[in-house]
Length: 264
Image (cartoon, rainbow, N blue to C red; front, side):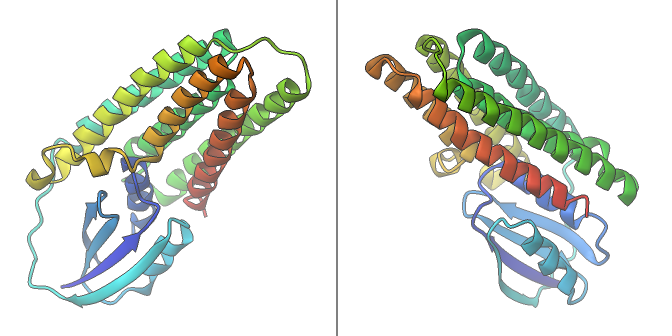
């Protein structure tokens, strides 16, 4: 048995973990994947030297780089029977907050909340594909990944158009209090998702680490919307909301491109 250790600099939340799992799904010879999200490391246990593993990881553009490959005596791996149940949990949380943020974003006129809702939807797609496609046929997985990726890009482009319309047109200020309150709850929801998924990986990760929580893109986005809400109130301008909305739409499109890579 061999093990290859990869450093993946852009792997900062469980949705990236699931993207990698789906990308490597079906490659023969892989015995186990061991993810260390806080330290951005992935250890792949495989039966033989397999260049396809490294190639597949690099194709996701998550900053993947192989550190080493060496022999190991480890042959037994503990499977987590609760993994599917936990994926359903985080899928439910992310999709619920997609609906909440999209609704409150439209009502409060906040593009930051609308954009963040699409980021929640993007994570929902990843968990959904993990549940419905992985383990099925490769063609089915690719088809679902393509549909999810293109749908995500279409929504983000519509968001960009709306940002431009508001930037050059007359629009009332977004409700800063709604932006802040909803984002705080979304921040808590992301923390819960990170906690329950990391807890499932190993006993050593049973307690939520601050370094793990605050390196997550999702959490940074939530904090960005909160800061934008404060600035909207302080400056009496919608520009901070439009700026954070634009940034998040870019991140959503990047996530969609990664999903589309699963369909190749």
